[in-house]
Length: 419
Image 1 (cartoon, helix red, strand yellow):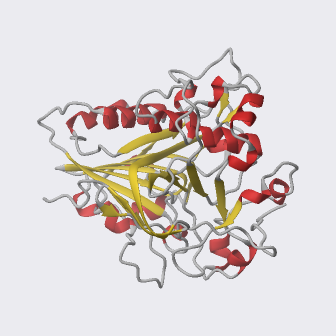
Image 2 (spheres, one colour; image 1 turned 180 degrees about the vertical axis):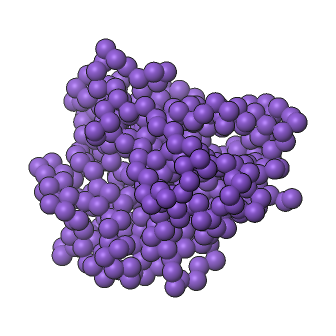
């Protein structure tokens, strides 16, 4: 059988009443008639809705922070609980599907939870990649397969599932890298098992973007322009934006003191646009109150002293009056801004997801997250501030939002869902 996505592809989730050729439903992704087994991870997971898409014979393994509507026979699935050093505040936010068919494995990385509203009321990103599978062969591991295996290990995925990937050929995963986060240990005397914290979060992003270990002896020239899209607003400040901006240039911020980093990249050179829906966009959205519940921001965050108000930009949806629940980063590099990279995954643009350096320059991460960096990405532009098309791996990349930089107007206010 010919593979549908042999080189990987980006699609978007469908919205009821919107005809979009780039949209792909969960039913189409699962292809249940041929599905043998599946691993599903999600922050919130509607079990009955997921099972309604599957054949009873399909073996199902679940990892989720919250499972809802679980009237399905418990003998038909297994639940795995990853390690949470501080379970009252830390959480599982990864959104990942591994789908095993007789002759291939489908990797699905989504910004949508496995909830019906997130596949019908709001737009999300989906990355799909089909890999050949042959149970009679053992394929050589490559960089991507090792990164994926480590991510599954961190999530406590059963060994038999991880081992089954030895029979999957990942040779065509060459322009994509895995970026994950895992929750940090609170007590340094009781570190996480088998976890190297600098290999996660924004520090992992810096590693992935560096073709070779970046030398801090070379003069640093900031040339990245970031559009950071999320559905939840975090406790941002100038220092955190600067640290992330350094990581986006493949630089590890820990080699400089906080004061040295501020001198290296003054606030006015930190070119980071935090794209978030405005109050009027949410109030006028076609999905009503149900869709509005998928955009989260506390007023106390926006009103906090030091919150970077000037970094707020309007999130422009692909479809008028449809809210965007995606988590993505569009990075444009160089003088002409015609090349760069794209992040798609579960990370909101928050310190909880990407990590924050503490006073000892050690990272603290709150969530499990899973995402991918697609690189190189090419931008076709009419003018430098307006992207006509995004291309990766010789194909167009549809996004659920317009990759444009629109600063908030005087009367624009970010949507706040709670005090």
